[in-house]
Image: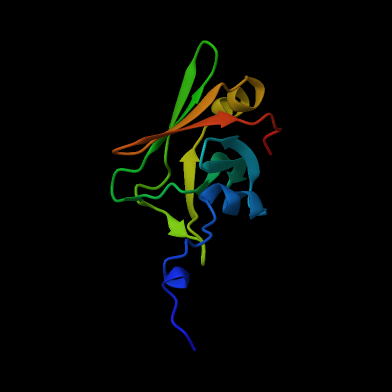
Length: 144
């Protein structure tokens, strides 16, 4: 058996994060927004008679936040709506055997805010974490 340096230093075929994201069939929410390397899923749900927003970010974004939480901003034509995360601890988890992470974040919501998000055209969605902002462009879809 012969040893070959060409096999040792041969470049490996590495899939990009976007390749993995396109293969993921996420059933836990409605695809709502995208940016270069991340996809955002969003649904408005109700628990005990109170609405809340359930979001999931899947992509190369990763964070671990304690005690500060984050905000979610919906940008409309002449207005914006800022929501605070339901929990102050937020942590991303890596999807096994991939370079892709998923981050689940819930946000408090009133009935009037729920109606506004469903009825007005959203131009941009922004997550503000303690040291970074993640911006998404909405995909035309019907929120559940």
